[in-house]
Length: 484
Figure 1: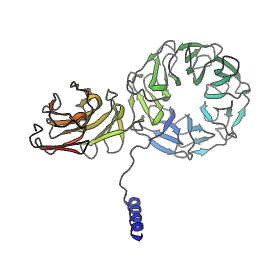
Figure 2: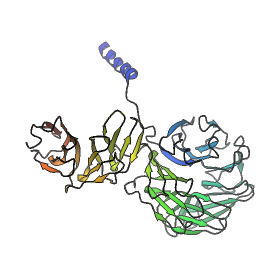
Figure 3: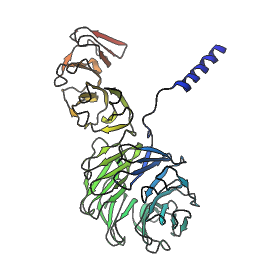
Figure 4: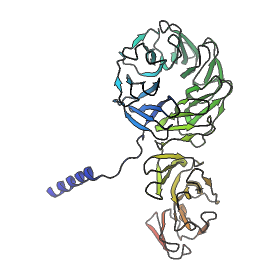
């Protein structure tokens, strides 16, 4: 018994003292609810649990900040690079030093706080559940509950002056037809009085944004037509429904013409005529993501944040979107390969490819496919090949900036790839498949493995001698490059 206890203690102490593996995915399993930038370089994103991340290089690298809470954080707003507020589940926190320190502010209520908006360092509003709207006139030292006359869920608030502010949300409609009603609220006297409109049933609003006291947009969810993106040109007295699509979580306009909406299932839409028409900015294989927040600093540069810690950036108005960092992908990574101690790639489910050039900070690359990638191999810092499900083979010759498919007419799952030199390589996969190239992947020819078992891994020590392993304890060896 003593020997057993000693052995267990040794394992525990050894693991505690000598663990050498460091998690390089600081955002794993997080939901990022809102994103906000003060210029093209400096921004913050917040989420669950108690997550605050900051970038000072336009989103290439994100640094965790200590929020002091594990509550879900739902909204963030900065008036400059130093001063900002974050709100969430009964939480208000403020920083005056760019997020190095966050201090609690007393809301005086227990309801979830969903959205925050400031016009300067002193005056701001917060909207939350149960019809709660709070206002401060001293930077948050005191928050005063304003009378709204309702208990609706208020999801978004947008202040444009010390007197004029807008909020949207949803209410449960009791008269038939039963369902959720879109809620729009407005004040023009600093919140002394709020007017409320129930716009229709069978839907709700998640986001509101106004460019001035008259022109604004709201977005949300609608079970049926007329739509889930709305526009007003008279301060909310009347609304026009412009688009019926998936649920929209966030809408933002950089000017009176250029706007974006982001939402459910990888939804991104853009308008260039003030919201009258919307076009889809398709991300293809990113359908599994929900985008929670969109923010632009001009008509070209913008960011999106969303589920499982994803952040995307565009520098051309959304024609192209690039992932920033390896945050978390809602899937798995299957293979990793390094060409030196700094430069490496990892691949995984849903066509994910990520790269590091410093041995630890990972940035996503666009593979152009949605099939799972199971193995990756690089001959140098520029040329590499990844393989995966449904006979997928993709190759890059510029370090992964661009990947192109190499169809070979098979649909087998491909599990492993290995090159003995820049020209000569092999791939193995399900149903005993082995294929070989002698021209760096330009052409592939089949080899006879002698088995129909699934082959999981292949390795060569030179152009002639190699091994392959797989299901049912399969181990096979060749000494003539795979001829036998």
